[in-house]
Image 1 (tube, rainbow, N blue to C red):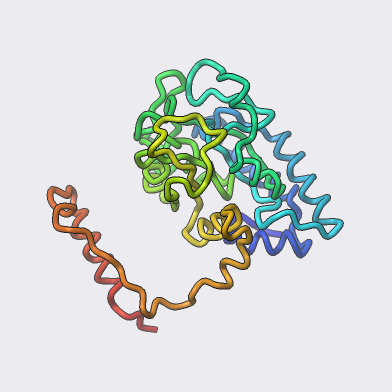
Image 2 (image 1 turned 90 degrees about the horizontal axis):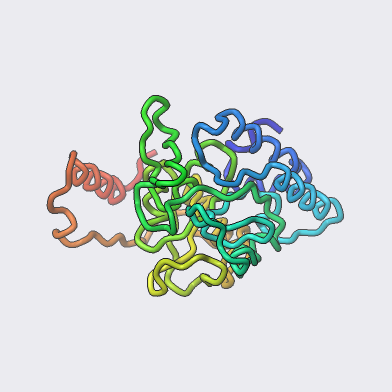
Length: 288
């Protein structure tokens, strides 16, 4: 198999299930992609290649006997260090290891691991998720991969999540979002970010910032990848393939809401004009 990372997650998952791609080979490609950048991009606070290999081998063993644990089986995934992950300490971007209760899988991580996804490690974040630029006073800030010369912000607080996608060490990244901590790093690294409705997914096993606003979230390289992954993890769906089969192939009948004028006042650097052109493009029927 060539560069599997160039394919959508749905296609990669299908190839894994058909035996045309091995989870171990995919993990090795993810490891090689990370090592190509060394530690310069700082995506991970806990990089775990040997753990990833074990995860991938378990996924392959299940595939070999015809067992499908879930749509994300064998998919390389990074996890923000705000999540409790069994076998990993949790620091939440702080210099101190948190209590043992934050080393027990919560429902979201348990779901991911039950599907035999390949966990690549835990990603850097703003200390206790309180900040949007990605800066951490103890560890520094991951570099935005889009500028090889200047150290630009990757967004936060899930600062390493988007970077892990850009460097090719993960196909799916777990983040959390209280006040844009998934959406900011997604936007600033050119990825797709999904903040869920409060209460849709459990926050158990996630270090809290705001009990009224915290939500788990995911980042992916595209909206198609985000949709597949969301459906694979969501209790109301549970199958990325079935979800995609039900997605409309056209946009007939879709209505798009446009925010009130207040949202357009004071936009800088022509942002308002760019967004209006994008809206006009969406409203114009596609011409072949």
